[in-house]
Image (cartoon, rainbow, N blue to C red; front, top):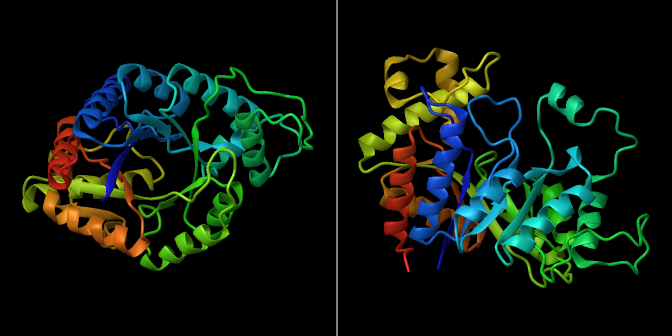
Length: 334
């Protein structure tokens, strides 16, 4: 049986403000819990003015307090920007307040050069990504015996449980890091939609090293989904998504997610049509039954039982309707 989870960007719809986008994310999380989704994750994006999700830990705190049982997580914290110790303390605090409900999804940064510079200003010699992950594991397990440059240091609060750890990625490097760290692995199909990448899951599972935090491999595939009540509606929503992807890849993107009406009125140049064609491979589009079949195919190819859907379409009502239709198609509700 396939479990469905959600990754939300907190898109700022055309004509809306950032605060409204964050409130819409809250309502989406509450609805996802009612509909039977397993997790609700939020993203970290910098210098992308059409989404409000820049600090996942802070938004997670709000969402965990606004829900009761759904797992709340980051998809993900861009670890190279930060101190592993501080990340560990942030997530131990979340876990202490909401035990058994917190996921730490981590990734490498691919931000703008200026963002990288601002977030890393005045830092000393950088610590490797692999070491940062090992550091977090040390702090999550209260290990003060193993050799480490901060051997006696513990991350507080100490609450008896720890968040689940997941590594996000699209290649052999991230799969190897996740396996050697004994963490879960999330493949970003929405960034690199290659069925041949299913081999990464086999390599991850073969190389997986059990830890005190996780004794067996766990996998997810993350996908963009565009769900409409009809094929026509799905295509209208997908066209707005096409335009948003073009916007964020441009030099001067507008600070909003374009509406279906705006997208319908705008034509695409020849070069834009080529980009749209490439981007369409990154998303699953159709009615709930159509998208369900596509999700089942991906789950079969990757041999995973959990899919992390990104319902990043125009309009909060459309996002809520989309996850409701998917829930009904998969019969998620308890």
